[in-house]
Image 1 (cartoon, rainbow, N blue to C red):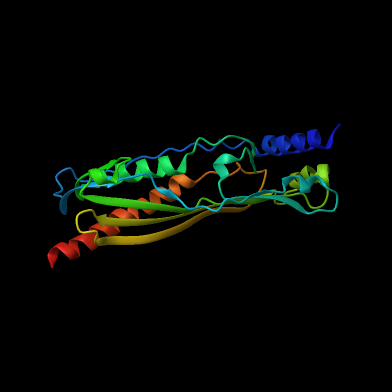
Image 2: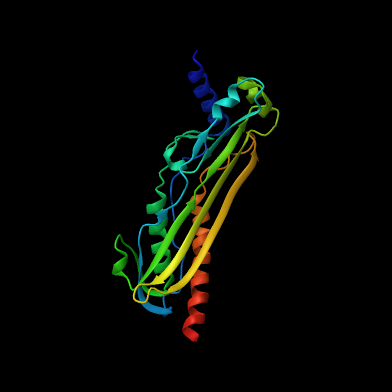
Length: 236
């Protein structure tokens, strides 16, 4: 049996023992807002595709976990949607950050009623205002703990020792600009994380994809922050 095949068997066994967590799939639901709300600014907001400023750095050392005496293997991805090998096995994520985050932001802002309209577009000039987004991080990292026992690590998991760790990080900067005057109306940077450290085989393995929930938390604060900032500005 080749080393590559053994490694695949080991990771597949990890997925099986963990209950095979669901694949990364972007799902985003818009919050409910009062339907009779009057816009704070009766202007149209264009939301062009967010800028992708993530570093191009993806490291996978998961196979180290099958080397005797090495205590764990790990992965550390800056662009996790491009990599199939995750902590829960081999899976392809249905996630396009620059598209998914942008469209979700446009829909949330539009539903909030803060403006006359907010819409996703590839032409920022179509709006009176433009909401810019800069994706700085979608980092995914974690490790499989093998305790230096290589293929015999599952014996330790069955005894109740931790099996691994999972982390997600999402950082996005938002900027609202007036197209006519080029004035900066609002700017805020968000950095949020999700972590399950450690997890065990005797519990349902936690999802390794939580970017939709992280972004939902961001957008709830974006709406509140915009409302507060714009209300103060319009009251002057």
